[in-house]
Length: 115
Image (cartoon, rainbow, N blue to C red; front, side, top):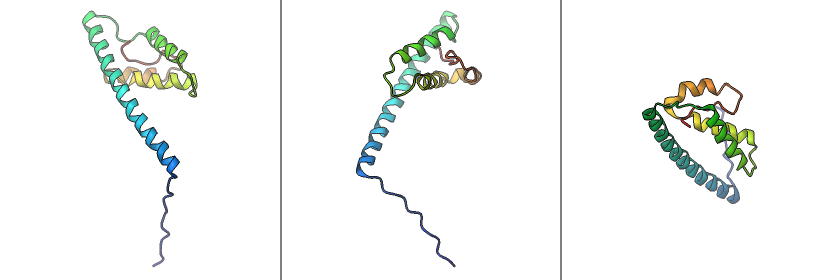
């Protein structure tokens, strides 16, 4: 039986390992912030339900995306920032069906989280 060559996993340099630790920490912080945003969006949705106002307002979604793009210092491009925010806003569970269909639209008003 022939020996199979072992795959060797390259070792990360200390500098790369440090950067990965920073990214892991930032990922956890982002996750916490996105979940905080979702909790506030749930409150918005509950209030709109009680008030009988529409949950999804494309004009408000556009405002949110325009504000976040205006605050974007880079290096992310505004198109990428808009895509990220659309995804975040479409992740709210009760809006999943509308968000999936809205995400196929190219405009900046395609997210479907209560606004």
